[in-house]
Image (cartoon, one colour):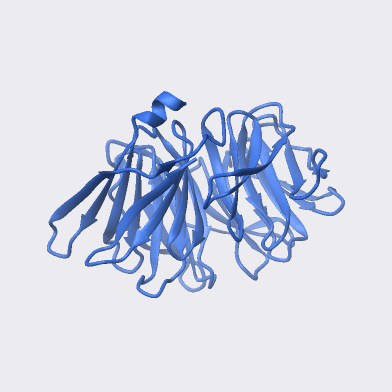
Length: 342
């Protein structure tokens, strides 16, 4: 791990209105001790200055993303952690694993997991917590989506859809709906009350790897697999009215693994961010699909996951070099600046 980190360089690419490209760097953020002993597979913002991550080392870690300090480490899964998420404004953390299990951890609890959610037959690949933090939805490569009571751990429903190999889940803010991406190349909207598919968006040409929902609940974002620039796009969908494709964001050259809506900042219009196996993080203008900035994390290998800390700060989980802390800096052009690696 140390050898890989020692070779990391960082470039920020700025795309100007006239189509020209300016590269800045290489630069380098502060190097902290690695949080995980192997690839980091998932990262999520917890609250304040905290984040939670999961890795191939089978552990779940809680860190201060400003300092890189590990505050808690949870060990209980028998195989690599595939996804982590948390309940909004709470101390509860959820993790899924290749061992087919889902666990809940309490931030300030000293012992093991406070709840188990057994029931899937294959690797669990999707986690979503309801807005009121009372229910959990999980999805798996076993073609099923399950709904759970968080307090009791009881299964409230289980639904199977043929060829529905789940890749990601996210809950629509303030609504009973859950968005799901799948290896069947579709994006689905589930009604969590009856645990049924309420709508399936038009199919894409490639596997849909990740999804996110805007805070106002108007739009869905999904990302695509691909290779050599074929596929690899992110897609914006209208959730409330036409439920059709709005636009695509093309520029990655390998599978786009993660996509997130960015909070609007004082000088930042509606924007999204994506990460890819091509080792790049891109920020896009949501309305025009113009690429505003690109960070190339050389030596980081495939990028696995993105998390939004605040209106200007992103976390990126990588296979080879831990978690990267990136900051969006406004000047004549938007730049992505690396602050730290941990």
